Amino acid sequence: MPEFVPASRVTRINTSPSVAAAARVRELKAEGWRILDLTVGEPDFDTPQHIKDAAVAAIGRGETKYTSVTGTPELQQAILQTLERKTGQQYTPGEITIGGGGKQVIFTAFMATLDAGDEVVIPAPYWVSYPDMVLANEGTPVIVPCSEDTGFKLTPEVLAAALTDRTKWVILNTPSNPTGAVYSRSELAGLAAVLKEHPAVHVLTDEIYDEIHFGAEPITSLVAVAPELKDRVLVTNGVSKAYAMTGWRLGYAGGPAPLVAAINKLQSQMSSCPSSVSQAAAAAALTGDQSFVRESVAVYRERRDAAVAGLNAIEGLKCATPEGAFYAYVNCGGVIGKTTPDGKLIANDEDFTLYLLDAASVAVIQGSAYGVGPYFRISYATGLPVIEESIAAIEKAVLALS
Ligand code: PMP
Image (tube, rainbow, N blue to C red; front, side, top):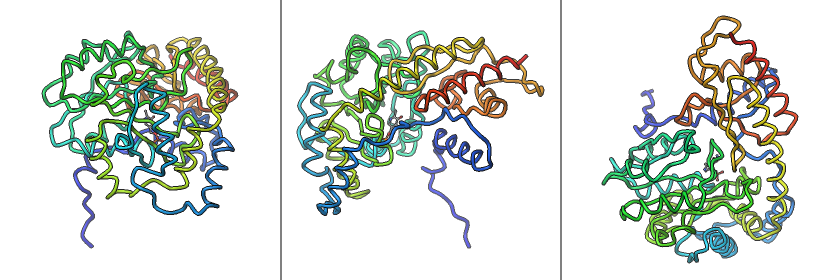
């Protein structure tokens, strides 16, 4: 049989490190190890009952067929209302798209817009999928490191320096995975001022974590700050994180009609539409009782506070307080160069995360996967007892280094 040769778009990209980490944790657990898992990128809560009920009712009504590419009228209405609430701007049905998760919407947006050599500015630390999604679609990721001193955020100066006449997109992710950083209104205004000088540049603002934030004010969307940029901003979101619906696979976006038409044309050939049942559930999530969001954010906040305080009490580790999402990005510069009890040098954050898995049975993800080391990401979408036990185990492992 001839050897299978994948397309170059496959060999160009990596499997998502978070998916790989989750697979490794599953393997170790299957071998009988008890692993304290801080890698999880999804809420540990169940989908609220009223959302499940809406899905069951849709099945009962026979809503089990293809829908239009842009979704059922109910979901479209729900998305239009939600986008208006989040951006203060009105969107029309021709300006929204839906897909099998925010991930698929972002992938399709790149597929619809990138030609070979087109550049996409990706502030680092970044969500692991952005560079590979760009590469898979022939584009060139332009990784722009953002230091802890600026809260891991892009500044106007750094943005201006990264733009070229090949820049097609700039990605913003607020709140951020992996840092939990949130762009303030004035920070967004500063970036908008630069973007106004570059009319050919589009912005993809990934706001999938926008309901999970710990400040008094809601998360601000770039479109709310700079409505004059609306015709070149794609606001992407979904129901996965806010409503604990990762398995339902439903994401959406709002953007300029010609861009959305191009995305929808591809969607019509790729998936026709996301699951009709998930669409009914997502409509219920967006328009129904929002108390789950408030309650789960209160729980995340308690865990965040415990995690940050615990990690900062460990010598060699340092962790800024995340303002949103359910991750913390921990500086482990203080342990680099140390030696493990069995004589191995910790040369970088990957060595440290392997050591934590070995010595403390704690699974975290190395910062190099997100483009900025030496850090590691923890997720606190897991119970407080696991967080507390993990911190105690990490502390013991760090103390054993010499
Ligand atoms: N953006 C970011 C920053 C994420 O962390 C994720 C999920 N890990 C997504 C988008 C996509 O989520 P989904 O496809 O479940 O909507």
